[in-house]
Image (tube, rainbow, N blue to C red; front, top):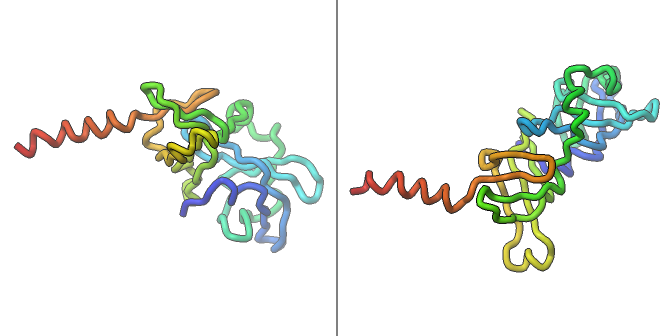
Length: 175
């Protein structure tokens, strides 16, 4: 099931063992190399510290929040050696500029959808400023259309070129 980013942020982290909240997920940790949610920064309810919930420890994502086995799966950033390179990047998807390979600007990322089973970002939604959006509106981009992600922008395939390739490939078969 797809969930928008807002449904996965500022949500309760619930323990199956205690049956209650152990913290609040505040920020997603996204790997820019594969757009996978590697985890969340969680404000620990007991200590008040900013901890990390690794996505492998998530049992389920429900309407009540993110379900984990126990509070003890929350870790401090120093403990996560394998995740250190992703944590150091501090990648944020919201606000990245979206442009096509030919340079057409589609606006900035305003939201994204995550598939709850694989925790992969499946859709990115770009919007333009109020003045520009009067003529265009928002754009939905599938992860398969993304060519490159840099520090400042997301580069996507040109829609017209891709459609042209499809038409060109099917034309000879019709004759």
